[in-house]
Length: 130
Length: 123
Length: 292
Image 1 (spheres, rainbow over the protein chains, first blue to last red):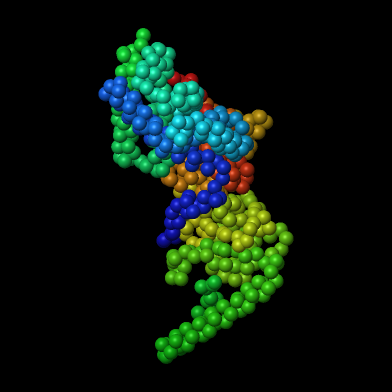
Image 2 (tube, chains in turn cyan, red, yellow):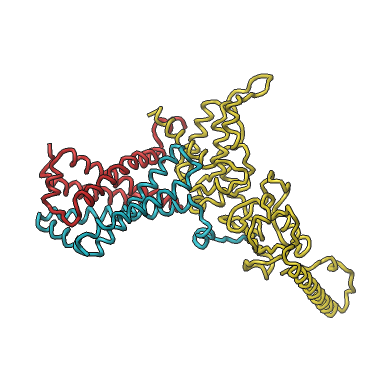
């Protein structure tokens, strides 16, 4: 027992193929959460150009919105937000002790639904820049 | 030991509030996205339109509440993630205060912007 | 494959003089014997390979700080003759008894009761004795439990796990004991805690938990389940329950659970661990709201 071997974070990175639904749900929820909180800060920063005057705000927003990259990023943001909302609902149910046996299915459902909503929204999001 | 029990312990309180804000945000975030991307298109956003919306008290207060709950939910989530990763002691305290200051700045900036549009609290 | 050679001959008597040359001879003899054993093993292996379907290939994690050749962890391959109903533990025991006596792993009851042989088999925490070889893809990869330090081969250091278990005071401790009679529990109350009592302290859940891996202070699913078993036992009394809830409500108690369900999925006794942890979270909120 004098010496032992620390295998470190084995299982955490290299074994992603073996992750179960609940683990993926957690990873996605954390990731989308980070994106959303990051966006919250940038969002307020952009909006606060309104403090410098009416014209400055309108030009900033319209300049940003005329870029295709921004539109694509917005679709990404929608995907992130929709997943976080749907999986968040799933987690609220889990916290209430409802449907724990179906937790994997509800994760797949939120993934599929996110995909569907995002695909359906693409035309609205890229309108006028293409 | 018993006196510790007379009030919420940090962990319990934060857990509960994270869920309460979650339930609120689910609805309001969906509404926000719908209103500003589907009803009004992002490309048509102007100062004037934001001004018009913000001058309604209901909308104004909803947005302020949205800002505060979203900030709490997001920042608390970040804090939790760091505790889960095993961050403790002084480092955690430093992170905690950084997050609190950042949240305060964010809320102040957000409220100032909202007030500019509304031209003061729209009562 | 093997680094160990039968050492029974070492105690043989030898003359004091000519020590060096005798030693030399012994070394040579040993070497020869080692080679012979190795050759025999190889032929055995080949035979097994030829018979194909009747053997099962195992890849076993090896590490031993006291043997130079095993200080750097590696995987050894064993081909074990298969019979119907053979478990992973049976296969390991066969490999140890026939190929390499130094192969080290914990086991005792061989019937999923003692909780000694939780292993990481084909990327998942399972009990060796409860896992049928026929359910696994070959080669069967057998590793020690992740997130615990390896002491030797498949043996991990369980000290931290036991510390967490002890932190929740895992014993029945009623405030009042009825005189001269048994301490009866209602049928409903027994049903409530029944699943939680099945824990065998194998550590599979703790090893599967992503959060326990990052946050060393987290009590972990097994300890929380153990606390659930007693906190929910009505015979213990209100004060005792409050005390138990206080332990669970700490920052590194129930709140760290992120409902990934990993523990519930790997538990060899099918304990609904996540469900129990969630119930304790709600219980903590409820009891706090009462005081608020």
